[in-house]
Image (cartoon, rainbow, N blue to C red; front, side, top):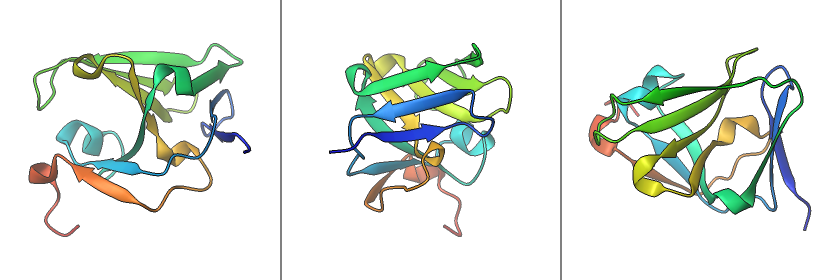
Length: 122
């Protein structure tokens, strides 16, 4: 099966997965909403399932300690174009929350997390 590759807006960072994930997780927490919309679409994968190529050393990380769960979340983004790339939550060590918006085709099957924070019109 072909790999599944996405990129940030400027093309400096590519993220490759062995296959397209079957499930997307829509996070409605306030921090994800502030980062770009009414929710964030994520693929939750093990570190060994994600390959990141950063040709221009463009990744930057924001350590978020102001989270709903009071746990630290490392949010990685492209410092050139601002595209969110992935997050890593201390409570889920070894997992990447890869931003599905990096990919041209996005899995349709989804589940919602932090629904208590969901905007009422969604």
